[in-house]
Image (tube, rainbow, N blue to C red):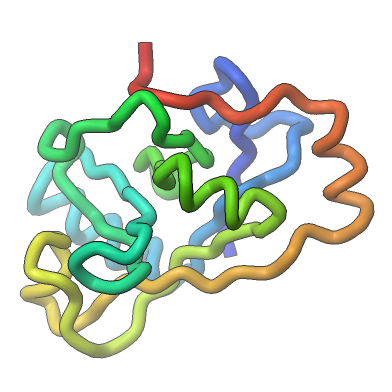
Length: 144
């Protein structure tokens, strides 16, 4: 599983902050294939619209990031955001993007492939949680 760190101003580059998002090797392979077809991509963790709470994958400029959306990090060079209200509920949770057979939402670019992205989660460990107390909060809103 690929891990990514998301410190302020880090743009998802690896550093010493606690990773908030990761990707499985299977999902990484699908992302690379989709990027070859669609160009740069981004993910937004849905809060219940459209396909339940599935992570939605869009061409980079086709989803408008709101001021309350929270940047979690990058997977395979793709920024990953979550809605602000959803982040408040999941802020103590590490998210891993995975892919399974099935049909995703019509808006997410993987749906024609017969697979869908899903989010697996786990609560941060006590050690991760302690480290996060000393880190600035994640960036909100679109990149500057």
